[in-house]
Length: 196
Length: 171
Picture 1 (cartoon, rainbow over the protein chains, first blue to last red):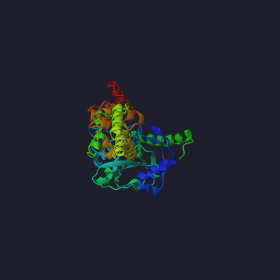
Picture 2 (cartoon, rainbow over the protein chains, first blue to last red; picture 1 turned 90 degrees about the horizontal axis):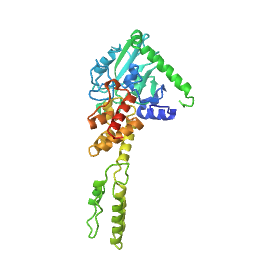
Picture 3 (cartoon, one colour; picture 1 turned 60 degrees about the vertical axis):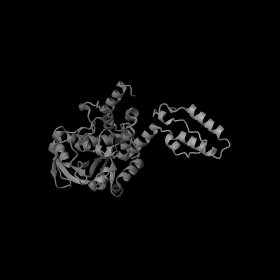
Picture 4 (cartoon, each protein chain N blue to C red; picture 1 turned 180 degrees about the vertical axis):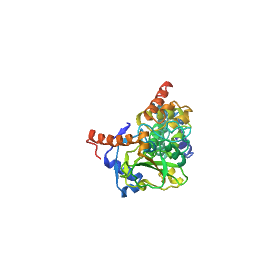
């Protein structure tokens, strides 16, 4: 089943078990469960493919010009291919889209989140689980030690990237962001019984 | 498992060792009677006749029944580990993190002795539960039927491995 419409209480318990800090912050469900894309693709504005840079591992896509390694630097270079540049501030800036890279203390990238188009929080696709909108980047952070990350922690925010809306328009990012928001609205209309 | 239990049996005089069925317990989940049930029954009957008056009778029967129940059901082991693996890594995106999970490594370990069966179970699980066995399958079979243009596209990747399994008569 590529897409599942799980009820709210299951989603909530699932997320709180994995990300304890979410229980103490505001967050929203923004999509059904879907295994066809994951966090990096979602941050890049894609929901039809899985992105990850691992050499010799079949089944994942990575921009051909970016290094095939899971370091933060490789992620920065991969996102440079769609117009993102490093920036210092996590705050919303009118006219820019931002993404954040979560990493372990050894600089191994583990997760990415994309800022809401109007700055109302950060959108994360957590593995195969539902997309969520969390108010703070820290909500899904965990222990950054390599041992903890090998056991499933996302580590901490390492780098924030941004691109202008003009750049996003050229790369199709503006269209994708609008389409995902519209699609979620359609899901909820089409499945009124979906208890979220 | 049975053989291991038998090895732990005290060496009572007059005990009859159970049939050496372990080697024949091939992990073929479709054939749950892979071991020779008739041989076990015969052994149990023989044990009952021989030790009908023995103090060890009840202990012998208990061990015999326990051993029979402990026949390795590799499908069940696979499903248990796969379920645990997928539920505990569902929030992860990094293949490195996903593949480091103990259950994933346990399944790869199971493939050391039962590679064909594990590959078959993986492909079936890929089709039914869409769990990401691509890396393990490539590692075990040394093949990669996924076209580079389909990399990252889950439905296409599942179809590629499914077709690969069909072409080799695995599924």
